[in-house]
Length: 191
Image (cartoon, rainbow, N blue to C red; front, side, top):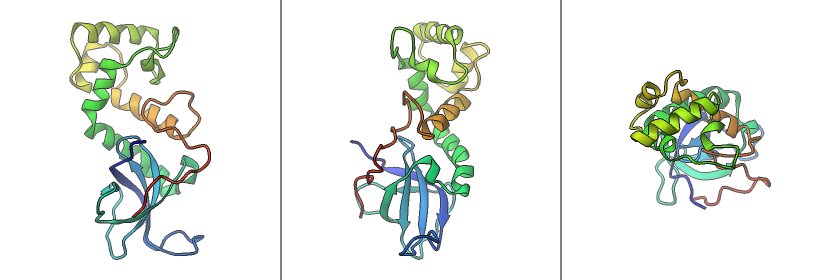
């Protein structure tokens, strides 16, 4: 399973959680590639700001001491829940080409359901318009998707809403978020 390389801070607790036995600087993060929610220990004396991008890969890490665990939406602090939409929006903006590519390449899930229909606000009519528009010429930006598909809601908001739904953990299909682990498995590596 491919791991997240970078994540962004959605909450920082300089003294850790009050319920933790071992109090250490702790941050809650959202991964940039699969929107994985993580809790990590931050190296002491390391400044950490909301929205900050951190390297969490297997090589030497500057700010992160160890990845404590993968968490679920319900494990997020109030601050993390408030920051999450803004940080996810920034990730979508920074990875616009990847998400535009999804509009270009998305296909059917079943005879009756297409991947694009999983985005809130896209029904059969918008789906048909998107498929026809991308057949003539691939989309190159969100702005182009909106200009070539009349009355389509803002693609950033469509993706943000879908990512938020998937992060809640109740989706049947996952387009953007790594599905939740059913047994609270550890994320896979620590340093």
